[in-house]
Image 1 (cartoon, one colour):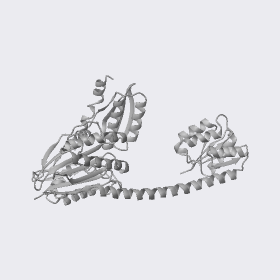
Image 2 (cartoon, one colour; image 1 turned 90 degrees about the vertical axis):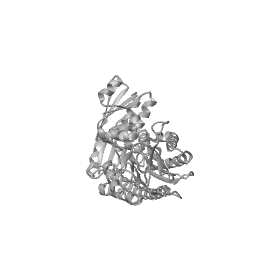
Image 3 (cartoon, helix red, strand yellow; image 1 turned 60 degrees about the horizontal axis):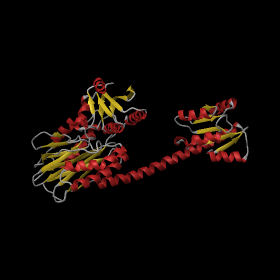
Image 4 (cartoon, one colour; image 1 turned 120 degrees about the vertical axis):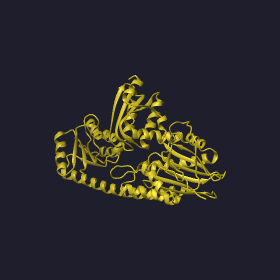
Length: 380
Length: 113
């Protein structure tokens, strides 16, 4: 890609001579005859690599134009070479303090101008590549660490809770993501099962996920009803979610081993599937909206049983919405059929089978959404 | 995949989205909406009659638009939801979060525009 140079010079023949010579050397040259045109070009061009700026211009002088241009965030790293008819030290110092990196006194030799331009372009290229490498190493190192922390914070502990087998797995689309699972015993002997999906993915979503985990842990440990816990979490999270323009879908359930029953609230979460032994799998509908839409929202609760060999599969929409190269989605039907086919295995085998089924379907096509799954199966 | 905007009345604007409404469309939509609101629009209509899919980012930008319109005493209206999109709205209970009309004409009738 050609490097772009903006030449701001009111002397037409000089300007055109510079254009001719620099274009010959392979640069793309844009001309401007005064400050107003220069600013218009800066606005119009996607990017500039260098600006040659005459100091003695009609209207706005070069120093002022230079200051204005360099205040624009996209332009602050673009080097400016001043061209001036005066040679006084004052002017040179003024030039440097206005943001120029170099100074050429007219009349200058074209060979000298070209040499200065080349030197600046070269040093820019080196700076850019070092900058990118550093950025890459830094962000990959940090992201890897963040990914490790995110995974370590996902809990799936049963403690002494009996009669159920639980498997949970999270696979973010990037190193870190907006999904979470949190399975742990409550003080009253019930098992709390929570899965959340923050809209979006990558680092931005991951930052909200951490807060969602904290708020949900608090709410589910304090409140005996998952619906009430959801409503409290929504009130707590509403302002922050509005601030970052995100929504969260959450499935929260409490499992009572003595009665083998699961009471749940499902905030806008599309994928909660229940399969009673001997019956086909079916989708459990949402019992309320995602969190973050209204500051005051209610969540209904429903109950399902988790008898021996009954199944509860909760996953993020990254599962049914996973798409292959032909832009086909895995879909809910495939998911329900896959669950029906594999239902007699253990929770872990079912979870892995479903993840593999999606991976095979997708066949190497880029994973576009975080994928998280929790499988709970009733046992003796 | 395309996004076009137009205005119905000085305070009502329409954004028509086509194809897949997902994270890639969100920045442009956000920009268009912000521009409209800055120019005095209070009611925004999303015409989704040509949309076959919405994801969570799209839903989030609809919620954002709704909140911003409400702050100005207006609202967000959706129309023309196709079957696959309607299913997503119903599954997530977000059909309760917006005023939804079958088509543009009904939306216009309701708005008196």
